Amino acid sequence: MRVLLSLKTLTTRSGMKRLISALTLTLLCMAVPMAADAPKIVGKWQLVLDMSHGKRTGTLNVQQDGEKLSGTGELEKHGASTITGSIQGEKISMKIVLHGGSFTLLGTVEGDKMSGTTDPAGGTWKATRQIN
Image 1 (cartoon, one colour):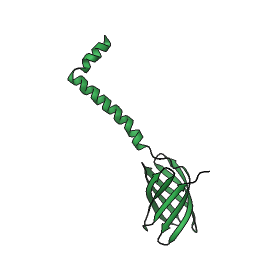
Image 2 (tube, one colour):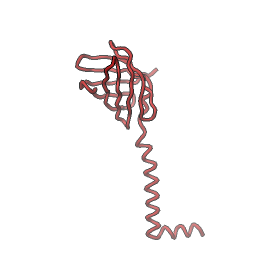
Image 3 (cartoon, rainbow, N blue to C red):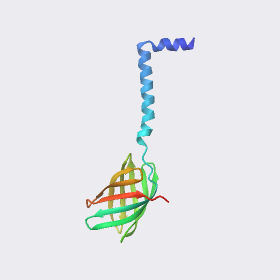
Image 4 (tube, rainbow, N blue to C red):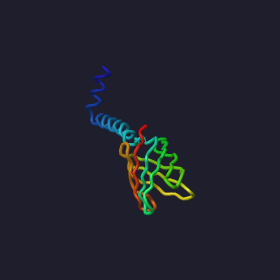
């Protein structure tokens, strides 16, 4: 009897509107977490910077907490540095601080590769995940 009552309710105009609203809300709730998942970039990366003063290589050791990034790096001829940044979808931004100055790596992540541009200086960079 309860099932028949529910089916009867669904055949009314207001019942159908409620059903459509509930289904839409359910689908939206399911889609938001999938769209917000950032790629996992935790680990060690081999970095190549190509800037106006030359090409440099180094490593990035990245930690990740959701969209928040942190870690350390080491650049050829510059030594140790600290990393802070964020990742949203495939877009990445990492600020590298060394010797009192800083620059930012802006780019995208695609699997085990990242690449983009530097700010300031207009250089380019790429990084490949180091697999142990």
